[in-house]
Image (tube, rainbow, N blue to C red; front, side, top):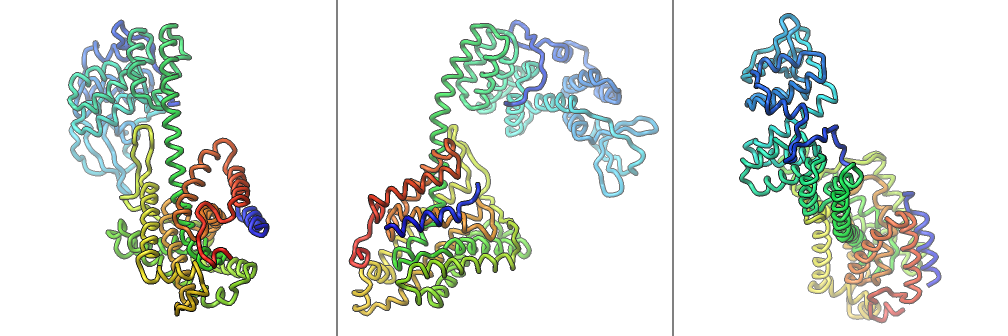
Length: 561
């Protein structure tokens, strides 16, 4: 027992790695009904409308204030070309001819320029670069243009663009957008879009000074109940609002903070389960080899690394020969990683480890040396830097479940880890090889007396554990850096999971991985990642003092010895 504790302590210290929304300037002078009547908004709604070409000509002027009025007036024309013109101006694609000042939209094309008419969108051919001059736009104008474009997009036929526009208006929470939002809400028929528009309207009203509108806005934002809404309400408690508005905002803030605290716990549990699934994948193969043969395989992490590099090679070949197959690259890499890592495992057992049974220190040093050899071999072939491994489309992105953010790649890895665990359990329970392996685990001498070739069971078991580590590397390549040091990040944690759960017991490995994963995620915010790992190690040492064989101890004569 003392040796085991000393081993884990030394191993740990040798290998552990040294580890709101910005609001735009707004005017706070709303009308009694909560709509802004500042200079810009009032001029949009009440000033006589000019023709679009005349307004665009005014963009050639030098006064930023005048240009802001012009931008808003262009939006107020409700012309179909207003949006493309303002978008071209925002992106620096609005030019004027040096000779006569004719305004065009320009796309760069090699040595020349592709011209188009801003009012019709028709192509005007090409021209050399030196004949046109860009109409300058500064950051202040860009902010105004983005806000105006958002208001124009509120009536776009595409539902997704209307949702995006509503989200942009919510983020800007500019009282000047209130008239646009009210108008768009009257015409909107999609309930989801209307909900987002109401929230954007509430955000804009909260930034004004009309107390009645602010009280209604607080209720809407409280119902939304997420972090952006919380940020807006917190800002309302600090602004020069009335005492009644501040009190109502503070009440809403407390309620949202309480709700978000529960969601935060749920998010931490998800992160813990995600880490637990990673530890489970890394530890399953080690549990097999350590449980059956009692071999402390310090090269286990390198089997994970080999699986990750197999994925990299498969994706590189697919990128150059058959890009259409990229989405199934992981399905191709899984059997290859299992066979390559498993073959290396069998070779290790037959060539080195079988001569060192019964000598744990020599076995540890030998496998440590093999791990260094494998790392250096990978450095020599692929280089020391990280390699790019892409996510297939079905593993990319994320989705929200309430206030939880669930990333697709981690969700798939959790499901994959469980699939590997149950597949391995089925192999051990329902196949002839699994029966022989369990017999050797429980009583090696008796199994040998019954005609089981224990040497080959050891070799195939070591190969199985290494192969499982290889397919773990395929999964880990989707969330971690693929480098020669990839396996070193998981070797200590893998041993802790196996010892804590119970050597040779897959259910114990599952419980140990999930427990350590969740516990780590709750511990890290309080004490930090490195100190958290040290505390976990200390707690496991104390635990195995009480239960030396872990949570779920194996039964059998060999195990008892």
